[in-house]
Amino acid sequence: MSDRNKGILLLLVSSFGFAMMAAFVKLSGDLPTVQKTMFRNAVSAVISFGFVMFYKERLFGKKENQKFLLLRSALGTLGILFYFYAIDHLVLSDADMLNKLSPFLLIIFSALFLKERARTFQVVAIIIAFIGTLLIIKPQFSIETIPYISGLLSAIFAAGAYTVLRVLGQKEKFYTVVFYFSFFSTVVLLPFVIMFYEPMATKQLIYLLLAGVFATLGQFGITMAYKFAPAREISIFFYSTVVYSALISIILFGQVPGLLSILGYIIIFSASFYMFLRNNHEAKIEKKASRTSN
Image (cartoon, rainbow, N blue to C red; front, side, top):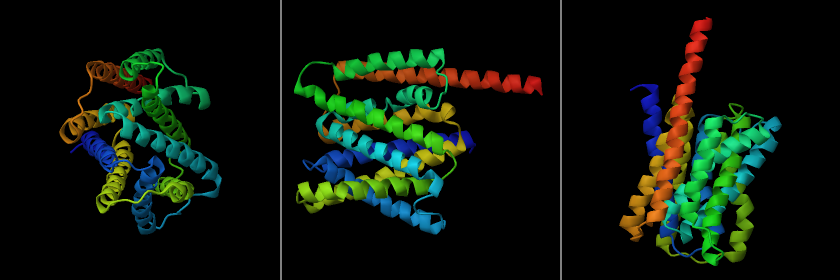
C-alpha cells in the first residue's frame, strides 16, 4: 500500500473514531457538558500517558514550548466544550459539519497570526463555505440559534488550536501533545465537575468512557495520517465523518437533517473539494518548476 493510501485509510479510521465519539456523547444523555468533556479527556490522558511512557518521552514537553502547549490546550478545551454542547442540542451531522469549518478558519488565522498569505482560491472557498454555514444555521433572533453558534465557536477554537499546532510543528511528539492537552483539560474542568456533578447510571459512564476511547482513536489516526501524506492530498477524506454522523443520526436517534442543512453540507463539501483540487494543482506546478530549475 502506498503512503498516500495509508494516509487516506488512517483518515477514514480517524473520521469514524470522531463520529462514534460524538454518538456516544449524545447517547450519554442529559449530563453537564463539562462532565462529559472531562470524562472524555480523562480517558485520552490515560491512553496517551501509556504512549509517552512506552516511548520514554517528556510528559509535559520541553520548557521552551510551554506557552504554545498551554495555548493549544486551552483553545482545544474550549473547542470541545462548545462542540459537545452543540452535539447535545443539534442533529449530529449539523454539529459535525459546523465543526468542520475549522480548516477554512485555519487559513484566516494562519494569515493573521503566522503571516501566511491566503491565496485567491482559498478566499473564494472560505466565502462559499460561509454561505453553506448560513444554510445550516438558518440565522434568526431566537434561543434556538444558540446551539448553532456553539457549533461555530467550536470550529473557531479548533482552528485556533490547529494554528498553534502549526507553530509547534515537529518540536514535540504527537502523543506528548495529546497527553498535555488531555491532562490540562481534565485538571481545569475537575473543579466545575465537582460543583455541578450529576450522578450517572452505569450505562452513561460506559458511553462516556467509549467516547474517550474513540476520541483517542480519532486523534491518533489523524496525526498518523498526516505523517504518511501531506494534508493537501488527503484532507478531503476527513469530511467522511459527516457521512458517518448523518447515518448515525438517522439509525440511532431518528434525526434526519433538513433540506437546507443538506444543501449546506453540499456547499461546504464543494468548497473543500475545490480547495483540495487547487492545492494539488499548485503542488504539481511547484514540483514541475523545481525539476526544471534543477
